[in-house]
Each structure stands twice: as structure tokens, then as C-alpha cells.
Amino acid sequence: MTDFAAAVREAEVALRDLFEPTPLQKNDHLSARYGAEIWLKREDLTPVRSYKLRGAFNAMRKIGAGTAGHFVCASAGNHAQGMAYACRHFGARGTIFMPVTTPKQKIDKTRIFGGDAIQIVLTGDYFDQTLAAAQDFAREQGASFLSPFDDPDIIEGQATVGLEFLSQLGEAPDLVVLPVGGGGLSAGVSRLLAELSPQTQIAFAEPEGGASLHAALTNGAPVTLPAVDNFVDGAAVARIGALPFSTLSRFSPDLVHRAPEDRICATMLEMLNIEGIVLEPAGALTVDVLRDIPDLAGKRVVCICSGGNFDFERLPEVKERAQRFSGLKRYFILRMPQRPGALRDFLGLLGPNDDITRFEYLKKSARNFGSILIGIETTSPEQLDDLRDRLEGAGIGHRDITRDPILSEFLI
Image 1 (cartoon, rainbow, N blue to C red):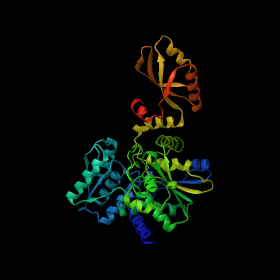
Image 2 (cartoon, one colour; image 1 turned 90 degrees about the vertical axis):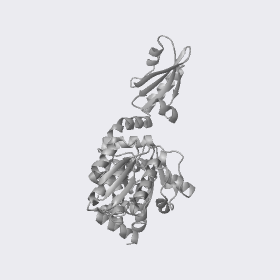
Image 3 (cartoon, rainbow, N blue to C red; image 1 turned 180 degrees about the horizontal axis):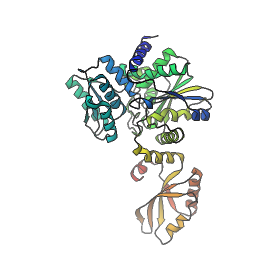
Image 4 (cartoon, rainbow, N blue to C red; image 1 turned 135 degrees about the vertical axis):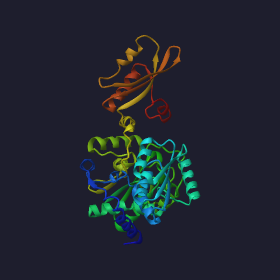
């Protein structure tokens, strides 16, 4: 066993003081769909419902956590909760910086996990401001700053996921699908597999609006994305970590599959409704990109479901985005004549399964015409295509804004 694998083994043994290995479950639904053996590594079932506890625990253990230790991090989610839990376990002091925009639910969960061992500081409207404040504070206090991914001990701790599923499976998988945010988990597990199971292939899953690994591999070095879609908040990172990239740089960008955010929503709903598995957006990444990976048939595949910290207040948004991706819901701006009976004429164009979910008069765009925002939900995408044809045939001006990022942001 190499030095890295031996260190990961030591971390895994120590980790058993906190929780038993998370389940590795064969999923019959996905296996039937892809004609493969699809196994889910359920990191959503750790005590903090994500794998982040592993890295935080290992880093604190190696630094020498104890009642005199003081640890600092910046996080609005899973890393904060993992460090909080580890602080309470070690009896160490923790200061956790969170943006002032962090939902109360996440703040409360972090406080529950850490108890009296932690203090939460809300500062900064944006994460970069929060991060800078946390790093300044750690330097001033002489405290240990815990990066969420750009740290060798964090990476080593996350790699314990790989040791567990290799032991649970009992044989080498043909393919492992790894989610990517900052790169700590993917770097750790891919390095471990290269040493213990080199025949295993690896694929990566990133959110389309935060594909920092794909950008780095394409450019040959980490780059900062000009904009990031924060919907997949557990993996939407503008720049891959430098240390993780030193491990991941050997891979081809063709192995990185970018998942559209709306499609991730459809995957989340499918896993919830069919399998009863609650996944956060980042936790659904690896399942979502299975459809993009060629030649899955007959293979033994492990997908790491990285977390399940999903706020059900977001469920209406997830359902909305899933319907839009599936083509079951569309939004139009109609240019309607301002005359009696015009609305009745439009309603006569709707099919028997077309349901109006939103109707809003926007403005009078000309003396004889007005603009209307309308949302329509139906049972198959083809029915909305037919409606569009009927609108054109009736001479009703319309614009489909369902996938227009600017108009949909302001109007929908």
C-alpha cells in the first residue's frame, strides 16, 4: 500500500469514531434503464448528510484538535456543517463565517451540529467577501483555517469514500462517476483508485453553470469562470482548487460531463418520486450525467451521491425547472389585440390538456395591442408545439421565453 493509500486507511479507521461506512446500494431502477449495474454511494446519509465531514475531521485530527484548538472556515453549507460536527466531537473551538444571505435553515443546522463549540459570524453579501474575512480572522487569531478542498489533509479525508466502496463492492468497479466542485473529493478518490484499482475508469460530473474543472483541463491550468450559476450550490465553484487540479490535470476534458441545472432538477424529482431518495442539486450530479456517458451497458458503475441537504422550500422551484427542461411547461409573451373577444379567441386555441398556470398583463405595447405573459403546463411537449402552431395560424404574435435567461429571470 502506498503512502497516500496508507494515510487514507488511517483516516478511515479514525473516522469510525464518528459514523459507520455510508451504504453502497445497487439501484435497480437505474440499472434497468442503462443495462448496467448502477451502485449509489450514499454520502447523503452521513451524520451531516454530506461527505464534507470526512475531510474536516481528518484535517482537524492531523492538526491536533483538542480543547485548545481553534479552527476557522468560510462556508454557507456542507463544509460548515462538517467542521461544526467535528469541532463538537473534538471539543475544539470553531468560528464559522457565513454570508449574510445564508438561509436561516442552514445557519440553524450548523449551530445544532456544533453546539457550544462553535461561533457563527455572518458577514459579506458574496462568498468572496466572506472568505476574505475568515482568512483575515484566522491570521489575526493564529487559528487554523480549513479550506473546503484546497488542502492535502482535506483531500485525504475525502478519499475515504473510495476505500469504503472498494471494500463494500468486494471487487473493482468498471467505472466511478465523481462529482466536482472545488475538486477535493474527486482528487482524493481518483488518486486512490489510480493506486488501488488502476483498471477502473473515471468520469466526472459538474454543473453546466460552474464547470471549473472542464475549463481548467481545456486551458491546461485553473481559470476563474467569468460567471457562475449558483443553483447547484454544493458544486458551483468559479475556480478549481490548485491542489486538486495537480491530481486531476492528467484527465481529458472529454471525461468531464456538464449537467444542465434544469435537467438536474428533473433528476432530483425522479430520485425523490421513484426511489424516495432526497438529494440536493450537487448530490444528484453523478446520477444525472449517466445519460451522457457512452457504453454503460454491462458495466459495474459506482455513482457518488455527495449530499442530501435539500431545503424543501426550494421544491416548487425544482419542480418548475424540471417541467421547463422536460418541455411540459412553457412561458410565452403574447401580443394580443385590444378588442372584445380577443381573450376568448385565444382560449379557444388551447388543447384539452393545456392548463394556464400564470396570466399577467404586462403593458399596452401599441394603441390597439397589449402584451401578456402566460405560463402553460400540459402533459407532453408535443402539445405545446401544436399550440405554438395554432398561435401562428391565428396570427397571434408570440415569443417563447422559457429558455431566455434574461427575460425568464426578470419575468418568471
